Length: 504
Image 1: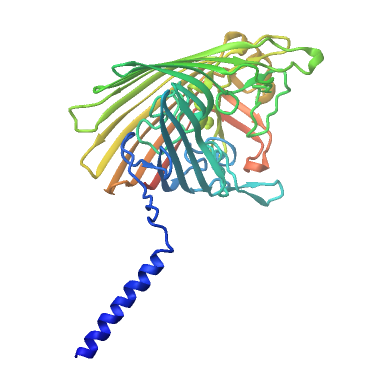
Image 2: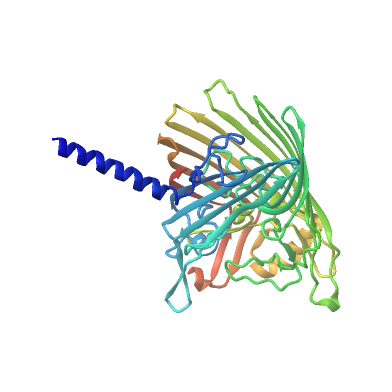
């Protein structure tokens, strides 16, 4: 035992000596491990980027959608092959989407510097169109697939990418004209509501926002009109083309000049415990090209404008979290501030009923005839929704929208005495390009666990067009429509949508 005890003590002493010798070769103090720290300055979910004073938050969602009786995800079968309502239209359309957003903020002596980006990766199923020989061709990017920044086939879309500093917003952000709910005031899936500006897709802008205190703020800025705020300048001097699915059935053809002036947008907003109120205005320059070519000249540019009022009421007696949202808008030569970009099908309708009926509804910013000046198109619209929470797991919304489109007397004189009779034939007994469009829908949402929601929704759309009589039209193999006589009459369509979404 004495021998073993001596052996253990000797071994221990040797290890201490060896360890001390090796320790002399190592740094006196190891560098501390830098763990990610919570940043509480800007709310939940922010963390400091290691080694910096910048806070970052990651978010996003994964979504799966299916729409019944829609090819436009989700705006209804109103034009092209699906609008023909025959075998070329899909009975249903699928879409899968992944969204990633990154929010960074840094406190400086001039205030917070913020950058924000939101990108989406989308796959949308396509459809088929005829080639005139009895065969069909697959279209991997159906109408409307690219309307919200993402194209079918798994391509990348960019919703937002902006910098905010000292009250300025620079980059791609939501238009200051739009309300906070955009065109989703009913937590709706349906993209195509008329009656106000959009919101889910950002627009390039340079904006200054002033905070006046007590929830009152004001914004003024300029934004790029090219992609989302140009509804069309139609040259009525272009020879009418009566082919189905084209945009100049007596309405001429788009004749834009270059964009010379950005849209000027202003907003005044009040946010209180009871809800919010917003007033928005926009000025939009319409710059046409030529009557025929540079030698012929063309009409002068003309400014249009839009105004919008919006109200959201919270703390309703119907239950916690319930809201009523409403907005109304008027435009003159600035149509896209009413019939917003995702409602493209509502702005350029050619809706068929079986073999015998068709209805038209076009909503450009302006039209002009040979040698004439711009005639601005006027519109007004509204949309509203009631959102109710039954309990923490179930919620529902009822929503609707309406828009009215009116042409000037001078524009109607050219269209109804020259271009439309030539395009549609002598059977038009009442010629009036004005129209109205109404939409109503409801949805039911189930959230079994936090941030996982299943939604089912139905929407009905009605086109109230003002023509009467018949149109004599040639065949169009691309949409399977034979030539013949078609009754001019009101149209309607419906869609049913299903969605599963996990937000993180």
